[in-house]
Image (cartoon, rainbow over the protein chains, first blue to last red):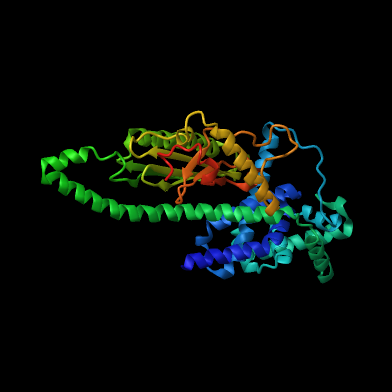
Length: 163
Length: 296
């Protein structure tokens, strides 16, 4: 009974949050098709494993974690494809609504971007971010601090300053 | 990042447009997952229930067989599956590597006859062999593929258990970067113990494939007209994509009402996001062609 209620709760959360999960995925894969694939696969994984959720409070950060991991998996499998046999796809444009602002995120490495996106866009607490990324709280703080510094530089000096 | 910029950032982020198509895909993913969850619990429930019933039946058999030579002789003529059908998980193949994971339930149908049990054994061992080969490749692959994951889940359930037919359904969920579901169903004639094909359910020369194809196409059109989230390959402009003729090897079972249900694997007759799709054929559509032995 308890698990049925929990499963229902997870389902409700998914239906409420899929647009925000889509945006989260989008910041990684940067095109609608892949982002939808990531969300769809994440939803499946989440529903299949709904019984593992510890408490309701944690559902939101848990969903974020699944999306982030699925997106990273996709990117890794892509980079492998490119290395082996497929030709890189001919110039697919990033479809950011405000290219300058969000493209500044590209200055950050994967860990940094995850922390910034989860903190400011998904409104997770630092402690929750630590759970998502599997880092300790202090590491998360450090990463956040470093990322903000990098972002400030890239925003004031323009895209070219990105390494 | 000062306050002002954070707000701008958040606004730019929230302005990332979410495609309309996504909702339908999320819902179909939810449905697929729930179906898979249900399939598991149902299989387990059925096992416990039949377990107790079969144990009682078994006790009766032992008792009767010992009581008189006449009864013992009569018992030998009891149809193969008629008296006792007990499905047990004969073996579970469980493996967990660093990046691979498998859970395969291998059932055995007691009193199920040679044909059925050897078909099950062949099918499950082929899947396990394939898994082992793929898993070895994933585990030994280079650093680039660090997060390449591979997982396999195979569960079964009894979908038909009528007087004449017994059918066991396997649901296979395979996750390799993206998920893949497929279904395999073994139907057996309870009196002969032989595996049934779709053709066996119909009278010879009845042209059942055309009738079924037409009915399925009709159902696809009706469903798509009623719910725009659904999509099937029927009347599409793309050459070769459309579902034009039912494959006689399509998986099937008879549901609790005795109606024929046809089951298509992911991507067979609809885009992959639709998952495994099923069509129930109303009996009046096939009443003239059906083999009366199997439809009650």
